[in-house]
Image 1 (tube, rainbow, N blue to C red):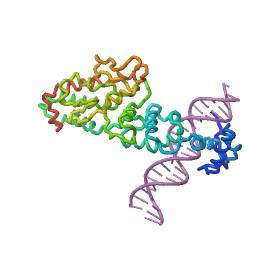
Image 2: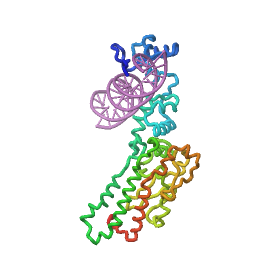
Image 3: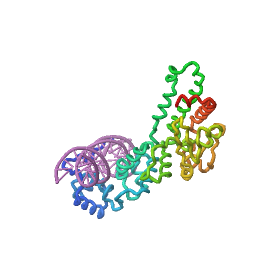
Image 4: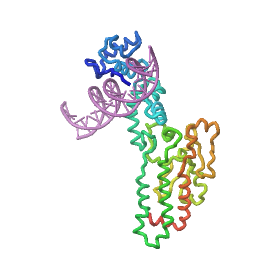
Amino acid sequence: MGRSPCCNESGLKKGPWTPEEDSTLVDFIQKNGHGSWRALPKRAGLNRCGKSCRLRWTNYLRPDIKRGKFSDEEEKIIFDLHSVLGNKWSKIAAHLPGRTDNEIKNYWNTHMRKQLLQNGIDPKTHKPLPNLNLLVNLSQLLSPSTFGNLMSPLDNAFRPQLDAAQLLLQSIVQLINPSPCPNVPETSLLGLNYISKFGGISDPPQPQALFDFPNLGVNPHQLFNNFPNVADSVTIFEGGFQLPEVLGGLNSDYCGDEIENINVLPALVSACEENSKIVNQTEESKKMNPMYECINYSPTSNMFEAAWEQFLDGEANAPWKDILA
DNA sequence: AACACATACAACCGCACTTTG
DNA sequence: TCAAAGTGCGGTTGTATGTGT
């Protein structure tokens, strides 16, 4: 679209506005309205371009502008809306009376983004930045190339257990980085989880939220129900679980009570295909819940279970305990 | 006290998109 | 249908202020 830029006229002032210019602009708009922004500077007697006047008015001089520090509540709203809308600052600003899109953008970039990064949360995806070093190291430790040279033919008896352990690790890595849901835009349920649990970024969590089973459509209780022996290796507590020390003692970050109060979160489902009917979710809430289509989108669940099964089948011998020690 | 560096924020720029006449 | 005007956005810059040496 051919269009002449509005701000390349020579002789027009740029840079910070003086109190006199502010006063002139405010007086003119209060008396006449802004009308055409392009025509405004001449009519008001300002040596500025229309765009500069518009920005100055909308971002700073408008009487309904709220100045000062963002409240915790405002931070929560920004975080929440950003998780859904992304960088749609004007849409976010529409939910924060008195705040401008530019102000929110600046606040996000200078405060919130930094804090999220410091706390291990990706400000773009609102998901934890994967701390996969431990798992990668374990995976490498368990790789066939590592053991190919070290293990004697006798030790190959342990190969099935090693394969199972490696498969398990791969499953965990995939659970941490699930494939994106194909039916809805990228949203940040972890962001809501984060807010719901910690009440805003002013009191951030430590970056150890490696698992988020509700968001992956997996209920840890149901997940481990089929494996009675798992209690010996995995600690299941209210709303979460802890893996055995041999896997680094990684723990889930499932915060059940708070999450149930957030209606955009998916309901919990069984990780088992045969039990994959929706639980705790009405037909109405399915309609309201855009993530519904994603609830069963957990292709790694069965893989995870299969790995566990193999893993636990071999636990009687538990050679991996010695190998990893 | 003086300086360098870091940080926060206002403001600008360029572009793409939408609205309007 | 088209061009101008208006709007929204990401990225960047300039300046004031804070902090450490």
